[in-house]
Length: 518
Image (tube, rainbow, N blue to C red):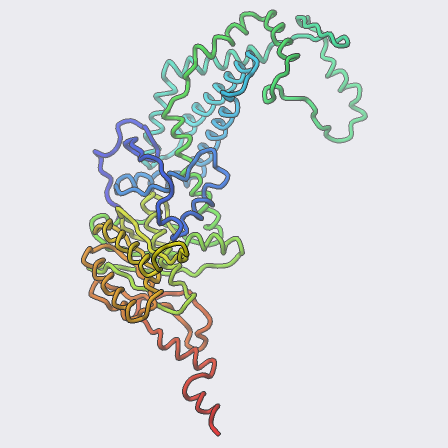
């Protein structure tokens, strides 16, 4: 089961939907292992179309605190309710509208245009906040985060400051919308005068030509509130203001009275909630293709970890786009088991398994549902990867030396709470040297008691010590060239694969003897 939430850890007031105590780590770039595990491709796909929220840093920073991870899981589960997602979506649209109305600081605007846009921004903000508060009040919310947000919104909407902002915004917007005036245009001369109940010529023209209507006509009216004004329009508005000094006087005072109307907590929520929305939107598409996701349990006090019917999320996204299915796999570590040695034929899914293992743990420590039907995963402190990379021709040392330097750096930083993922290390040297170095490397990791996945072509490493588990690729002996991409917990049998391949292509000793017989 998940670690039980600590009541003392629960915040007294709402400050963040991602960080219960409000203490977010400094935003940084992607961790070094992101590319090796294809997490960069996953995050790019998840955040596509949401660049304004700058969500990537949230996906770069895994958590270690089990209660904070569970906190996010609770919010994510609440967000799976269609009614809550609709409420948050409506809130986000109003906040986007607010930002569109905010004038750009570096540009020059006419005074009344800028003041009206600020009023419209405040109106969108009030609609966003009041609407979300109303929607949340009628929903069943199980998560601590969403319940705390509901309480915060209720208090905020009842505060005198917000009540005054909403009232003034509403009344001033209504009064401005009620203004009517007339323009008399004579050549290049425009006269502005008060409206004295003149008839609506637009309505009369429409009635006159109604019989000639052929379907819906295109609306050519310009929305001046969304476009820059020109100097002629500004002069017209200045003269209209002379007829309505009280209303325009209030418009002039509005930015002064409400210069800082935004609640920082609500603005922060507007960005952070998109972390959940983006993840559910991305995984929702894969769920529609029959792929399962689950909320993993946390092995905070031990290393008993497993995952059933899990898969590489980056690969699943690519295959889904091609209408192809992905092959799920399982793993299990219990007792003193710490090291998974993965062997099998080339292109059989070994590297995919290693990436999957790392992806699962990173995503679990973000509080996200992970690929699979069920999982129990470890909240690590550091994650390290060593995947093959091209040799640098400008380097003053060879590939083997580069591998050794990289591995030394990993071992110096790793702790018993770390995860190390190795993919085909020492492939640039002889089999004998690779086996010698591989045993020394696994001995170090085993003594450290860290979790490790080691993809290797050396079958001898699969039984290194009592902490080692062997997982091998499954191949149909009748057709070893066809890959099943299934990996099972069993001893390696690479020689059987080689023999089957040789038999299929008739190059075994028996076949060769028959073919060269006189």
